[in-house]
Length: 256
Image 1 (spheres, rainbow, N blue to C red):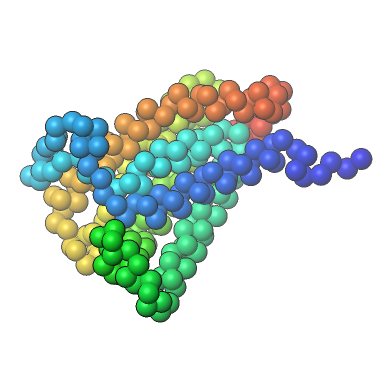
Image 2: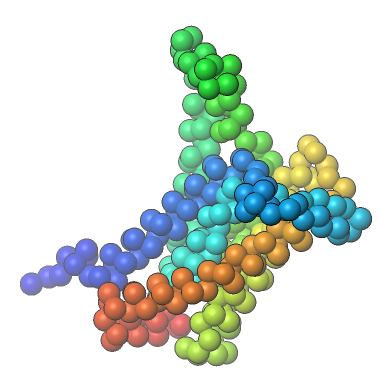
């Protein structure tokens, strides 16, 4: 009897991992419009950093809460489905991000119902249409920058991951995960800011660009290191789900 595609646990696993990967990537883009204060959120005294003649506190986009999960899903897909598996879902995620923004701008362009514009006045929102446009209408430079940075980061990540894997074999999962993230996020953190805020209409001075890029990079790397236990837990859970033999087969195929 011919096995149906979804009868294969590896196929179901890839679909599930790809779905969570894409959802996290798309959500990070849309919720990232809000900037939060890390110290105040944790109830700590403000921390003032000074870099390249610039100073500031630990303020990040809300999207940074989700990017560490994107890192983990990238590494897990890399581990079991290889370079092709990561590249495929990365291109899908880019397409979905662009698709989402197209319809966000379409939604902004639609004429609002008159009663709806003032529907949230009691909640302190005098103009619902203006609020909708402000939240979903991110600047085009930011959108282009984030998409290019994300795709570059993913392609670099998968390449570095496999270079480390070839050098270390099945040992040191944490090294190939953090090593690939360290290189890819160095590119991602600076490319997105350069396109959005240096080339974009705000024209940041280079000291500000390097300072904020460095702070963002350190935060991302700290989050990536903190997520290492989750990577090992997912790896163990997947091995149980697939069976040791099937999991080993997938890892060996992914390493080719």
